[in-house]
Amino acid sequence: MESKVSQPVIEGLVHGIEPPSEEWRQRARQRLDTLTKPLGSLGRLEDIAAQVAAIRGQLGDSISKAAYVFAADHGITEEGVSAYPREVTRQMVLNFLAEGAAINVLARRHHVALHVVDVGVDASFDSISGLLHHKVRRGTRNMLREPAMSEEEVEKALNIGYQLGSEAATAGHTIIATGEMGIGNTTAASAVTCALTAATAALATGRGTGVEPQALANKVRVVEAAVAKHCRGAVAVRPMEVLRCIGGLEIAAMAGMVLAGAKHHLVVVLDGFISTAAAALAVGMAPNALGYLVAGHCSEEPGHKLLLDHLQLTPVLSLGMRLGEGTGAVLAMPVIESAIVLYHQMATFSSAGVSEATR
Image (cartoon, rainbow, N blue to C red; front, side, top):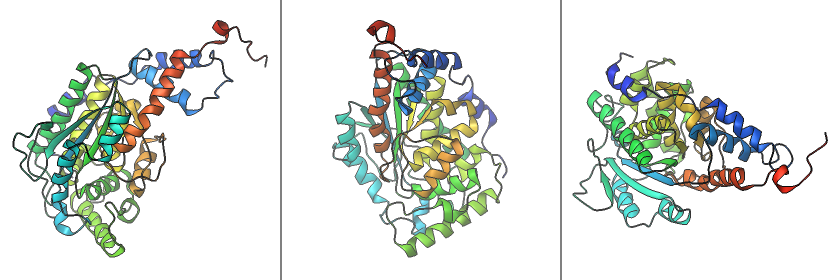
């Protein structure tokens, strides 16, 4: 695969991304061992608390949460890969703005600031209020016929996500979630999964919006053909080129947000399959970004587990979900928040006057 995306753009996005602090992780582990509980008895909550301490450099109980839903359409829908028409992307954006979707309910319940971003919906929203207007183009091209995006388009989408992630840090958010809406985007995520993990299309491709068996077989064929066309079967392909040729505008924007989150030492909570595909591409560009990621859940899409294994991430939740929108990530946030407040507010053996274990 010939590289088309300019190296200076990549270098600018990944410059200065350092791994989380191992010193702060060890400090957190030491404090966790002094709390009034048997050693390690809080399980994954202790791992999460230590990771957040490593990311943030310290661990107070001041928490500010935000979720970003990036919306875009996909030219690959021309190949009959979805059970829903692409008009549903526009309709769901309007539903988000009317606060009627699952992500709206969950964000309200868990006090998460929700932002909806048009990065590539095939519709005009004019100047409708409540929407972040960052449209790069009205959907990607059909990746079965040509690259999904041009060099300029993928760079713009990456920079949009990076800009919004940087603004989240400036606004004082400490935990951000990446979510998406885009008919056809599980096809793009499946193709990305094949390119990054060398999995077959049959293993990486699921039902997405709920396609029937015959349509699923067609979807698998489309994914296989797109990967063969653009990636030529290579495993060690350049992440930016994978993104440009078989990705999506919302996938690019989420990848940019992951990079910004890592740069600004934010906890980045991933949602499902498409969100994790974006994160895997970001980690391919900047390996140090991996330490800032928390997998909110494991979805029912088979490619999602392949990507989680590829990144060696253990999901916080497993609820059999395959909705997207950032719902799984927002559901995981109270668990992450619980880990933080337990770490901060529990008494130590010394402060509580409780005897420690003798052996």
